[in-house]
Image (cartoon, rainbow, N blue to C red; front, side):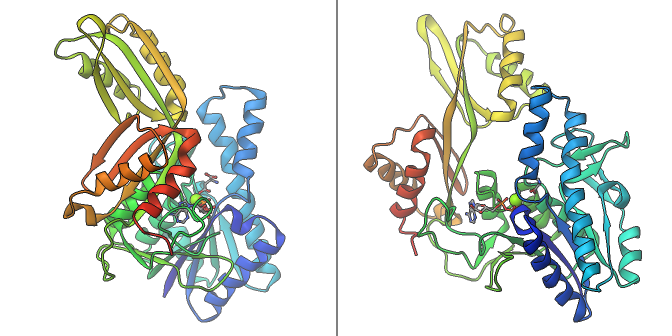
Length: 402
Ligand code: ADP
Ligand code: ASP
Ligand code: MG
């Protein structure tokens, strides 16, 4: 059997944790399985590297940033190989370049395109545990790229798909996927099984327990995922196509504080203006999320929308550059906003789900600024200061507590 095991940053944060992971991988190896391990950077390494970069240059080039960030994962894999060797288990570490993880060229947010499996297979045939850097790849210019924050999950799923692994396990610092972030909602419940579609909506809505692209990829290639704790042997959460468990109305709630609102005010009210604004942003690779159009002063209109905080500066710059062509009179923005989402296939057949969500928010005196929906998700934009309170209120409003 071939098993891919991914361990996140907190699971390899120090010497003790590294040996804990090494022992778990050795056990898997010793029962005769082939083991591929994917690691993130130790503890807060990625954040620390980002701070170091900012200290030197507040607007570092994305190429150099990736050059820096990829070192974090390289430290983890080398130390893990040393730990396994110390335990007399044959192991070898490989980075994104050595494996040849081919990605698109976009630094900081690249997508995996193709993985060469030859080297890994060769090492497995020699009965070594293969330890691979998560989060990184190489582009067509032979430059390092990274897959976006939390991207090691995606590396693991991509490897599991490419190697036709029998199991893909994502080990983290909680026991699985919960009905809400258990650090914010202490009475959140562990979910036994969840569909790819629901997990994708939760991950995209801010439940960072899995990188959203990893779920997208798992669905595409039919890789069943298990999310579980690296610190105990409790059964985790299975992410798969069809689940057997009884459907709840709502599967989970999530909060996303990494969001910003932009409003363009006083634009001319004629066909094509919205198209021009969003087309201009799209051409600069800026993803726009919730959109709200309203009537402005003197026959004009206003449009508000959200972008991720990383894209805010560039979005404002682009709008400023094209201000006249887009007929914008004024641009305002706020970073003090957050999205709260409820996710669940149960809402397809149950009217009144939105009303229940809004009632919970209203009872907690939380104002809704914008609303957006998909088939199995409802998202509201609120003030960031209310985010944790809102998560608890909505979670309890649907009776999701343990
Ligand atoms: P890793 O370093 O292992 O990749 P992450 O910090 O990326 O770990 O993701 C795990 C964290 O995700 C948990 O510590 C938890 O606070 C957070 N989280 C957010 N939403 C959820 C959820 N619905 N279920 C479980 N954990 C969640
Ligand atoms: N180390 C990277 C990050 O902190 C990738 C990951 O943890 O998945 O975002
Ligand atoms: Mg993660």
